[in-house]
Length: 216
Image (cartoon, rainbow, N blue to C red; front, top):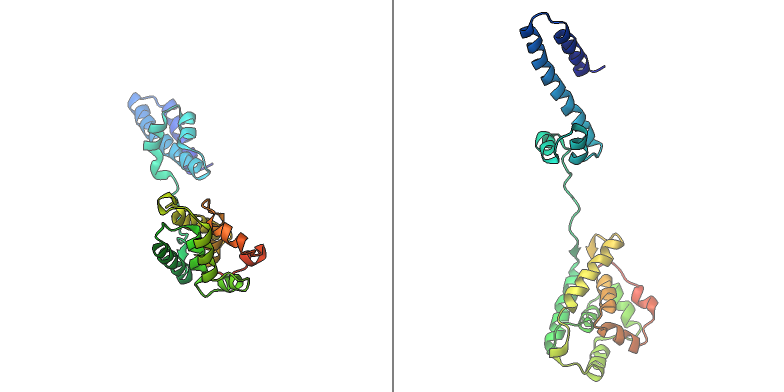
């Protein structure tokens, strides 16, 4: 039996057997304090065990708001998420800068084909795998000029944001600590604007080459 439980029993017995009302009342006041303290002990245990304030409120016959006000200091502190945010590698940042340059030169919003061009213009394992299959900046640009007849006003200006967001999801899903070039390439190929996908398909690039890469 805990100290609280023992004291509650003693005070209850003292109040019940008291001959004088004032003695009984003093015992009951102290008993109430002990009971309240014992309730708090069990409320804290319940919160640490994963019970909600609503669960405690139902058990005590009070409102959730009352339970929260009374026991909120007993709730375990939430641990701050110490997961470091995903950061881009220098090579990935360079790809984005080059993609913007290519889009400006083409007079169009950044599309997935421009991201592909940015990838091909960097020097990483991913780039070398693509170049070994004949994917060069010149060939990508030539395909773009000859096969994409969309006017700049018709282009989807959201491709770059979508690709970066999707690339981050890919990197996180495979446990990477940084956003590298290969997830950018995979995200560009999957982008709905279809530019990068059509280019690599036209150049007959094997899937194994696309999936090869490093984490730079």
